[in-house]
Length: 236
Image (cartoon, rainbow, N blue to C red; front, side, top):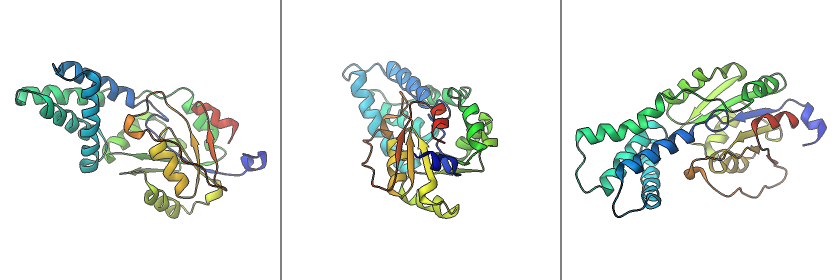
């Protein structure tokens, strides 16, 4: 980005889970506990995880994102793999792996509040997160970060039509609008395809269902990659 552009007001659409705060690490821990509990005699932990991924894809399509969908995926995976039928007690135990995530304190990623404070004084910030409405809005409130954003968009899916709707809703100019996030599948590729710019912040534990190759960038669109959230201040 040129120095001239950096001094002009930009609009930053900023992802939440695994961009502003930790999220997937708790799901990974719950998954590991579930696989250990299942202790399948014929399938390796890797094979069980692959089956869980497939079931999760199905659950996301039917029920959207969030803890309830994850809980359904754990139960569905158990039903698909276990020899014995699922009992009410087993069902409660399996759902407990997902429910434990809900009670975990929100863990903001390093230097996020300070960076948001800096950026909000110079640019327009819009929080854009996908998932279940009450679940995501609760995270936003608990984070204490809402004050830095001019608006919050909680969407069911981040795809090209969703980005186009948000662009229209806020009258966002394509040359000065950026989507900031950790997911190639949800944050980067569809934003670029919708005609805005993007900033990729890789996270070591991005959810496997969000993995995707970064799409080629078509000028005049721009794609930046930074190693952590605080590095946004060098560009904006």
